Amino acid sequence: MIPEVFRNPIGHTVFQQRYMHDECETWERLAMTLAIQVCGDHLPEDIVKAIAHEIAMMRFIPGGRYLAYAGRPVKFFNNCYLLSALEDTRQDWAELSKKAELCLTTGGGIGADYTIYRAAGELLKRTGGVSSGPIPKMKMVNDQGRWIKQGGGRRAAIYASLLHSHADILDFLVAKNWHEMPVGNTGKTLFDIKQDDFDFPAPLDQTNISVNYDTDWLMNLYKTGEYGDVFLKNCEQALTTGEPGFSFNFFDKETETLRNACTEVTSSDDSDVCNLGSVNMSRIDSIEQFATTVELGTMFLLCGTLVADLPYDKVRQVREKNRRLGLGLMGVHEWLLKKGYRYEVVPELHDWLSVYEGVSNGTADSLADRLNISRPVAKRAIAPTGTIGMVASTTTGIEPVYAVAYKRRYLEGNKRKYQFVVDGAAEVMIKEGIPHDKIEGAIDLAADYERRIKFQADVQDYVDMGISSTLNLPPSSVQIDPKEFAGVLSKYAPRLRGLTCYPDGARGGQPLTSVPYEEAIGKIGVEHEENTEWNDACDIRGGGFCGV
Image (cartoon, rainbow, N blue to C red; front, side):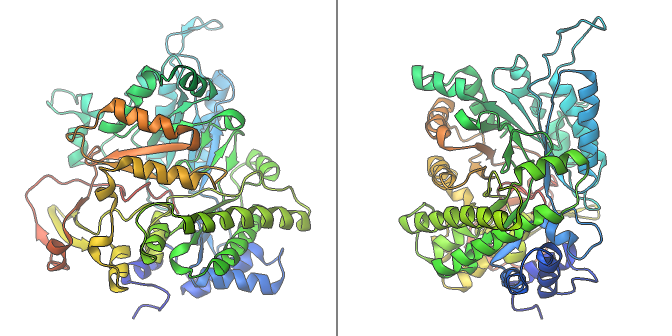
């Protein structure tokens, strides 16, 4: 029998497999252990107990690294680290690799901006050689992630970006076009091979990549109405392979080109750090309770900046200066559905988002003053919450449900098998009385991509860092005019910090295929064998895991 706090067996199983250990045998024990460990030396006992209660009730859920290190002697509570290439020198190349390895071995992901490195083929005056350019360096860091198994075996989380005007940008745009990369004389491309074996090495296969767009790009858009050839090519790529993504950094945010692997945390400072936790709107019934949960979650994350262990000293120095808090949201789509709303930022959600912004700002600043520490430079970032979304059995981040029902493929021994599955969050909502045909999934919304982009922009108005959200799109075989897509995206760009796309089937490694609910419901629990090609995969439910 699963404990009552878990809404279905999946959540309990994920807790047991990922977070349960001798010091945290139950979710309630983990909640109290973690609240004391993080806040016990800095907040009154009644506040610590209140924070533990919010975690135990799953109204506030700290990021996955917090949960994984609860009660352990080391406290690597931070999900990701933001790195920068600081100088165009061989010393900096080596230093970037060192920083990356130190961070990856803590279980954290990394992100880096490579714009400062000179273009490929440029003369190296001191040695008489020529530059390799930034893309080979990205590949070197990617291969560090290939061999450093995080948390005992999970895929490394890495991000790389390059400015739209960099001389190597055209090569960067197609750096992950595996379908154009032949493998020896096999007659197959890397994309073909990765359909059969997702772990087969390919350029930047551990890395999410994005193009940075700055104020010059935006002002040219305003002045001429033209978004430029690079942006159009970026959109063409987004509609076919899904990468690169888009990173928008304008005016006072122009130097904040650094991102974590899932892109929700932004910074301009090398060796900055993520600090994540999410308010679970699906478990909160009133705006008053919501305000309380936001307040206590903010307190928890601020205390986290005082106790978390870090991989090297510069991260500590930057944390002391910036003290970023990444308080996010999850369960947003479920909250909307329970109230009878479709996937839009309706007036009531605007009211709740105003509370989210105002309470987190006020709480962070006032508590920092009481603790006599620096005020956080930013308070809010919405992470993908893949794993903790499964623990809580709700929708992840601001994402809609991926699909109400789907066929899940997997490999057992040398047999390719599949089962029909009803999404865990959708199953809970259906049991609570929401008709299955009223639940719009990400696949359903793929044809209405402007509504997805507008939703993210409307939420971004209340978020002072970024939002990790994946725009699901139809397969590339379903034609969307790149110019039309570019026009829509450029219209919302000033209100976004970034965007990631995923056309259905764009990458090897897609285990989930949407199916009608009526087809799946009668076949739950039945294991089938199939003769089609096996696709192993990382998660595509919307934005990835990134340990949260």
